[in-house]
Length: 521
Image (cartoon, rainbow, N blue to C red; front, top):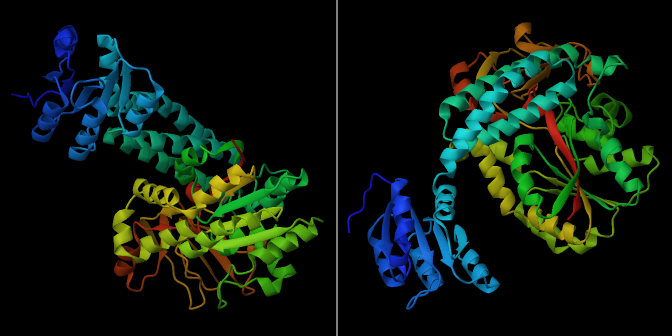
């Protein structure tokens, strides 16, 4: 048997293959190389010794059945697409075939166009996706560019970011590297525009009561979660630390098997976009300056020793108290597999509470590992790979088990985060004293030396409702994919941190983050 390796090769197995000659001639005229077999044993030998792009397999054959042949093909080549063709419409046969990971299922008699459509669907999907996606993005490119240029309020940037994430995920599935590079340039342009917008408008959100400000970290519980409790709903809040919107979009299809969306919202993480500030503000229902003033025992400044987010449960209890709410609260922070497994094992206990808050730290740990471990750097050296790691974790996590159990019990879930992260690549020189904060995306200190054009500076922290560690302390924030580097040992420092995922500064990825309310299906 000679196989033309220049064309797509298809093996068609049917014990009545002679009756299918018109179909075979039709496919050959379409450019496909068709090889035939009449039984399962010959099919297995041919798959063992030759390359085929796809197998068309009759289900009802003498000797080895189609299902038995399929199982043996899977042992030889688990990736080859197999289209099962059968006279039977019995449900158990369909279920067995689908369970054996067939690519498609056709009922006899089949016409040539049915076969052609199945072949295209299984072999040319990538090419078709690339062509259609590229064409659609080309049509949208100009409109998106105009939106970026016309954006004047925060809500415009939310819509732009949603579209950018959509196109990034769509173009990622295609093979058009040239068009993806065009997209990256447009996304970079949007990032610059968003940074300018934040520099020009952020402080006005606190000083101007008429300013069109977004939902900020400190208002998330009051506006998105408390109203659900007030109508007697049991609510689980799942906060995944450092979850970006694009990462949420790839987790959503899995979660949507168990939950349907009620409110698909975004909110704006406050500056600095780090746990110490953004998440404490969420739980306290207060901006950091007010937390430090009202609860000094629960707040540590950057230059003080100790963990900065150990009081989240107490801050949330105080927020509920200020709002006059007496809901029974359960809080748990999951930082390793053992605590996640324990939470699943004791799930029934969670049903005794009105509000359950579960903080998952995996993605934040992953971003730190991306900086510190060479192996993780190689596994997540771009945004696509980073998303892939997040998806893999979620698919095998106890968090997914909790979601399944919650759905079975009819519990409303709010998925959210405290901030996102961005892959940094452009170093900005800054000089500070020993008390200057260590974060790469923002600096807090009293003796900072920098180029004001490169940063967003807040000389009076109280204007942004941030605490002062010292009477002359100020903050600066990195823009887009910039990161701060000290002149000392500069080249080593830049090489070590470039292309790592960081947070604390100003970017759509860090600041525009999800808060999504979902109900069980």
